[in-house]
Image 1 (spheres, rainbow, N blue to C red):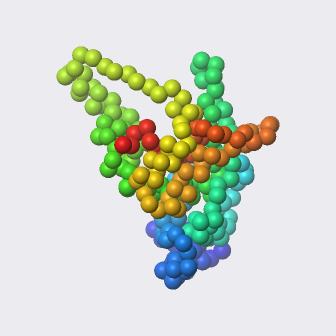
Image 2: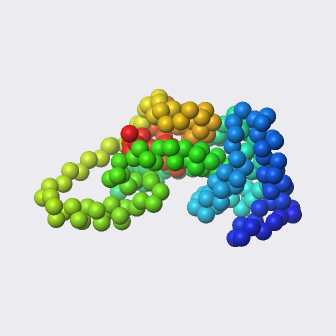
Image 3: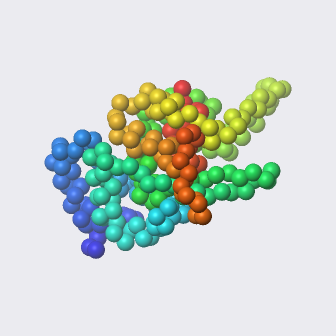
Length: 227
């Protein structure tokens, strides 16, 4: 496949040509999703790495037909026909003998989630509490520790609260209602929230249909921090 170099990234030439026709093509699509946003989502997924999903296709294998794969994903997202595949089940043992269930989406679905994240995050980020540090851009656990260290000199008490099994028991309808509160774009909800309903796909047993909870390996909306 013929490619063009753009700084440190390599864009398939067919994908670049498609971008030039973006405005004309977008008129026929129900949802206006810039192809550049899909490309940026791919770059972020590639930078994060990660294991293959239920289709056993790695990032390297996805890149073998990068232009076609990205165009296909963009076309399905912008036409409203995209629906993510099941997530691969991975159980991590805990110290207390229990297991933490992780859901690993496919590479294509991680890109689709990131497309929705790039569009939705700027809308919800200003709504977060200033003392919220989890899952936020530009925030870190080290920063939270630094703030806690400063406040230890001002107060002689600490409140430690944890929502037990938050991602395992989160209410699906509540998550959807919160997402709709912050966006009127249906594709952003379709691109972000279908993951909460996806079945797990274990290696040695049939798929498990889930009626509550969100897979830890995906990127669901974050109602535990947003107001």
